[in-house]
Length: 394
Image (cartoon, rainbow, N blue to C red; front, side, top):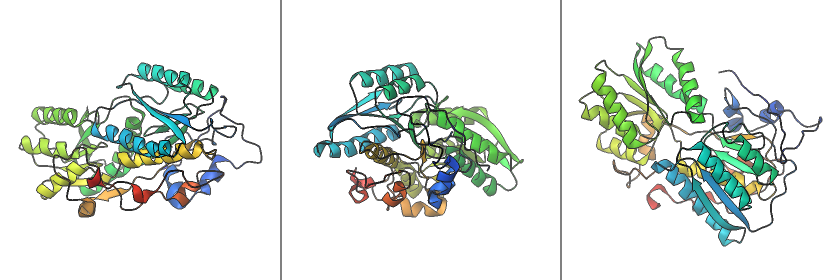
């Protein structure tokens, strides 16, 4: 996959011009640890220099405000819960005064209004899972003009003043379709189950999947449906597909957390359960334990707790005055192969454990690695991976 590194123009109050003597974006990326540097290969996000060179944090204690675009599934609820747990630690230390959350339920216009309300409340920082890559740009610019950093997770925005804590979802989509191609050397039919239509990550995942499929001309798309990253929606559309499509389906490419309900749908329809890709979850691991011959998986661990933790760590460092060296900080996704499932499974995981998500045994991005993303690094305040609750303790 070719490296795609582009620049964004900086034009807001929090965006400083890069001195001629400063490193180029390519030089900054080349100097990162290998585990981070590799995440920029083939990344679809536009990458520019860090935008907060002239930023001065508001006085402590400051308000931490979180703008959510959707809370309709356990994954997104878990992100907010873990972020709140971490920010509550800063509240206990007197660093943060309050943690406020808004949810636009998929309405970009409503999310814009909620961001502007946060600006009026004089939030110290706004973190967000954005509902649009471009639709929030004016509101983010208004936050910048008010001296409020805007930090995203699980989907980058094009606003030049934002700091995006993201992953290479195009690479993820590519690797999952590549796994399908290798598992089906003679070819086969692939059902595509996408997330929420219009979400920036959906386009990135699909672009990667399509690029990998081009390497396997005997793979054919049987149908494309939207499961909205929500279990009941996913199961409904898969059952409808199976009822109206009698041809064999040899694999399901999905970049969501609903692999268990997809396997159930095939079983309920009396169809062989194919290879399913996606993000591993507690209920999927529970289903695998109960049906070891009826669940085939290849994917990664796109974890809500980890998403919240990396968002918190970047936001907390920024509010301590640390300067990100790039506008997009790429976080690697741990791979999970079928042979690894026993290592991820825990006793509390059952087919009904829809709100249980695995927790990596060690920090996937150490503090030393995180330091590489800041020009003036220091330990993240309020952060201790050893204190992260285990999957069965939540």
